[in-house]
Length: 203
Image (cartoon, helix red, strand yellow):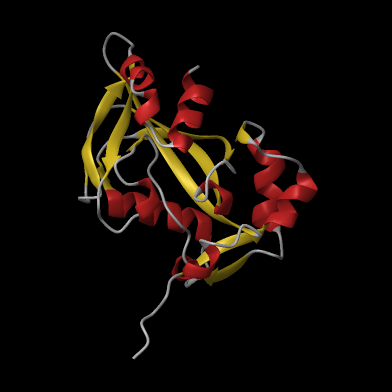
C-alpha cells in the first residue's frame, strides 16, 4: 500500500521574479509576501518532488524567539538540529529559527493555511509558555546551496516577556536562550538562514 506523501505550499519562482530579486535577507517583506500569499498560483505539491525542483519555492515560516533579561541584554532561543524528522541536509547545524513547511492539511478547514501551519509547527517543536509580541521582519532566500534553492523563508520575531520555552522534539537538541554576543561568536556553526537572520535582526 502506498504511503501518504506530504503536500507542501509552494509558489512558482517566476511569481517572485516578477516582483523583484531576493538574495539573502530582504527586509521589505510586504512588497513580496502580500502578492505571494494572494497569488492564484499558490499550490500544494508533493514534498519529495519540490525538494529537488528550484522552479518552485516552498514557503517556510521561520520564527525567532527573543527575550531580554533584567539588565536589558537580549537573548535568542537557539538549538542544534538533531537526527529526527527534519531536513537531513541541515543536521548538526545550530539554528535560531523555529518553523517548517505549510502542509495541505493546514488549509483543511478553510482557515488561513499559512498562519495555521506556522502555529502547528511551533506547537510541534516547542512548548511556548510566555506572552509575546510578533513582528514580521523579512524574507530569506539563499540560492548558494541545494536546500536554499527550493525554500523561501518568512522571518517572524516573537519578543517574549519570559524565557519559558522548551524543546518538544529530539530534533531540537541543546535548546535554550543564548546571548546575541555568544551567537555572533558561533556564527560559523549556524545554518545559513540563521546567519542571515542574526545579521539582519541584530547587526
